[in-house]
Image 1 (spheres, rainbow, N blue to C red):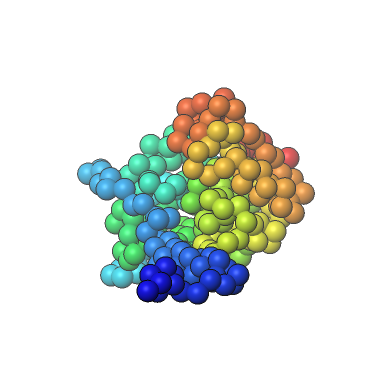
Image 2: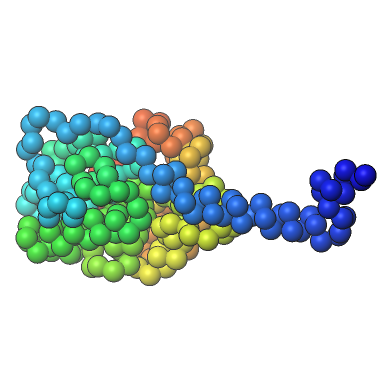
Length: 267
């Protein structure tokens, strides 16, 4: 009895290709199902007892938690989309530091982050940033020309999406990716990719600032550089940060973000 033939079947030159195709299909299905769980990592940081600046938009399954402090006279407002393992509580100190210098600041939590309802996903992030923008322009009365969109890490996804759809003064991308999958594979290997920044970056031409650490271990430096090159903006600045990774960019970086933003909009 030929046990090898029973176990593996009759040899064919097509078999390796069938095997590769089968492995690819299994991986594609796995990534499709598990992608949101791998992309989004909500922290367990609780909001502070002092609720100054904190409020929410909507209710129930559509509730979006936001943090808002209005701008001083003649100053712009930053609409900040935070990084993956952050929420409003963890970015609050940074936002307050901008507010001390006169900037208005508004940020929001993604679905399933902080006190925002729902489960984390791409479409939910788009909905939440759009609700925040509409609140800022319609209820808070901030003119679009006074709004600067800031996206950090995964926040570059909803930021680019909104920038391609709504009026604003300028865009700042900090450690951005080409897309969620391309931060790992560079080329498109699997369907169901999230946050295709490499496409949306071409759809808006407002002044652009891109900042990326040269030693970024989470989102390759090449992603930020490629996005900058894909942008059609007439006024754009790329700031590489030597010896900086993904989580220590602001510690290692010898730059003042507030001054860079003001310089960007005054060109």
